[in-house]
Figure 1 (cartoon, helix red, strand yellow):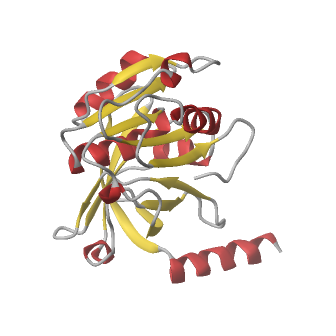
Figure 2: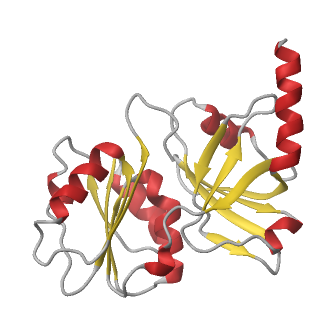
Figure 3: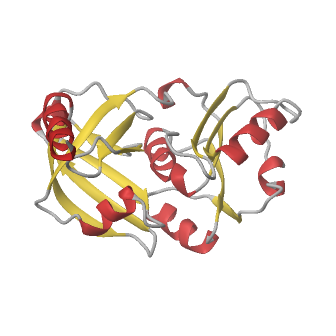
Amino acid sequence: MARITERLADLASGAFFTQAVVTAKTALSEHFVRVELRSDRFRTAPWTPGCKVQLRTDRGTMTRRTYTPFGWDTAEGTVSLVAYVHGAGPAARWFDRVTPGDACELFGPRRSIDLTGVASEVVFVGDETSVGLAAALGQTRPDGVTYLLEAADPAEYTKVLAGLGVTATVVPKTADRRDLLAAAGTGAYDLVVTGDAATVGPVRRAAGGWTPAPGKVFGKAYWAEGRTGLD
């Protein structure tokens, strides 16, 4: 029965997933890795900055992990992903073992946070899992964005972001999120907050009391302690 299930998963992936090839892999630091993918189907995909894709991590299953591409070149048919790799989950194993020339499968792109809809001034709050969205916003809006991010290793994350063209304030992750909750914009601005559900909820609630308050709030929890399935 297990082999039948695995076969059905592989057949379904062939029908619904984009088949791509890994063309490059670069370790940006101990915990961050960048991969480049190529497929002719990327040339016509309806991608806008902030869209997400789901990477199928293992053959014989429908296990997927979600990422925000920070580069999508329709002329070349290439997609750029950057991932925060930690722990021993399916995504960590995939990024550890994959090499240029390997085949891979993606579902999407699909709408997630539409970065084309944010104001000219933005406060961006997140963590290590927000790296792709931060880089995508940095390319879309090189000016007018204040990045305030939390990380287990602020120095490592600051260096990785700088290499992706993002200048950010990165603070240590704490239980009370004091530094993040003190964030505020100047003038008219929108708030984008993603990452840990334990951060996204409190920041969204606190934003209503900031002076001035954000015009629009774009929020999405990418993960939560002890839970799976968030994207």
